[in-house]
Image 1 (cartoon, one colour):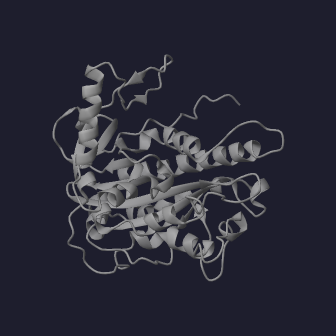
Image 2 (cartoon, one colour; image 1 turned 90 degrees about the horizontal axis):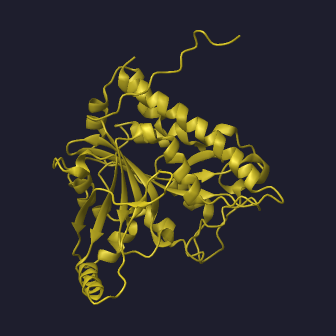
Image 3 (cartoon, helix red, strand yellow; image 1 turned 90 degrees about the vertical axis):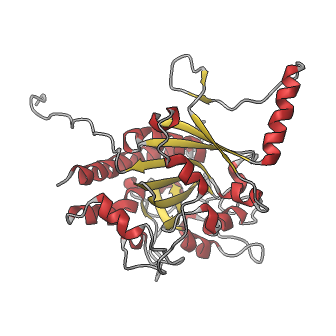
Length: 354
């Protein structure tokens, strides 16, 4: 098998390991008397720390949106190279102690976040893209079968929307029972590592990543596909798409030979004329002794001191700028197929104690 095949198989194995850890963390954090506070943001950060060997770049999206509660996604994977990329956009939800995904209708049970995930607008997505939910859960609180490798499980966003209902006409369904078990005729949520099963199957059959991405990049995905595996099947298409990549993806993947290009952790500042004006006013205020605002991301050092990350800036000036900003993910996990990192050697089993 090829190095590309091995890369994604190893990534799936690491995703399964992390899903089992999440299953344990959710189980104990939702147990009576246990004081661990475990939310979606912390769990997602832990997940991608575990997957740190399986992306070529992680890009934090910095906008002037107040918080993610009104935006459509926590993260996305983009896979490709050059001007050919495919996109998987994800919103995460964690189960509460009552066995419900209480924040599914965010914000304030309006379903606005779900709407933006499902329908972000053409300017925000690649031609081949897929919106998903990833659920963090464990069996003791879900009150249904949740295998350990499904501590992180994935479901098509349109199916989640159908199972949830259509607020505010009727209350949304939040119970884990409505979203995790198999449903007839619709499939149930699957372990999140299985998101990439269709890709691994094609690699196992001898196709290269370049060939696979080339067969998908210009083929729009129908909005209500039957399964996540359909994403990797070029015959499942709504037709050829001629749209260019969204501006923020072009900015992220551009080969400009700068600090951003070579760094594994970066920021993309998405600015508007209004935010630029506000920044200028803040800078003026700082000159007069007023406090300013700075974006920083912390590294993993013992001192935990704020460190600047290499960054690029994208200016957006549109009539619907706020709506465009609201659809962007919190961060992007980039898999540039020309820059896949070499994997560490597997631990040797020779000489192991008996």
